[in-house]
Length: 329
Image (cartoon, rainbow, N blue to C red; front, side, top):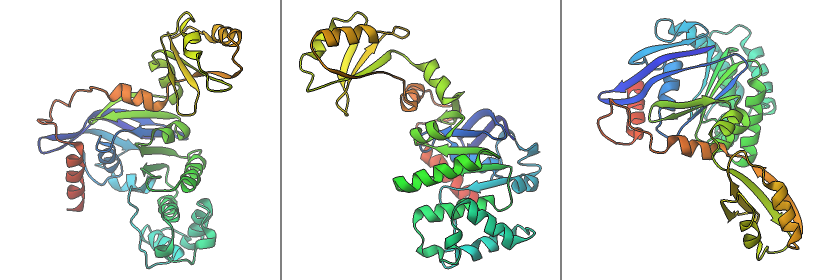
């Protein structure tokens, strides 16, 4: 549903995105990960028809985002990072207004449907200005769904929400993603790990890796880690673990467990268990620890070279600001 080939965007002599190529299929939630200013928002603005690329091709449901932008907009629902809402309107009136702008048939019925999808039907007559940020985010999602888009593009959909609101929005995205293509931009790594079928990691305008979260963990894991807990303060446990063949180092974690690092592919848990129990400790927990997506992200983006067309090291935030200015004109 989303096809991107060699997509590049320059602002003067600064390159925001550099030769991006990826796709996203129907029924797939794809995470677009990167630090703030990595080029995520610029890519999404191109995909939604808000701005043209400098070079390359992007298609939504087979339609070119430049040459067939009206067809693209019929098929894309977009939730920007900052949702543009009219705070002096009721929820129902705002959504009805947006539906009328799109010239939708049976607009009122469709408004009722999307309110039910985002679980806001009991707030239809409430004023948007009196809603919490989490509820406003749901209304933004509702307007993105009004025209039954085949592709949904979400830019930082949970930013600024409290933990309960984040869980609610994530659950809605999972449900919506079963029937649509979802491209989800985020810099919150656990969010991508929980929500996405596949992740693209972008750094300084380039995609540095593309894979499922699980395969990334397996493919890029370095040393294997084992976590264990014993009853009491564990005094003397370091000395016991140091005698186990294959132990590289040990460290104390925030939850009070001890993490043991060992070479990949070597399962030393049985030997650890024997040594710990023999030394008189009560072993409460022993488990393998996989690399988190955060570990992988830091590994992939460390020391990544600058794109060749960028003549200085100014922050990508400058580029994103230029994108804002370009869009407003």
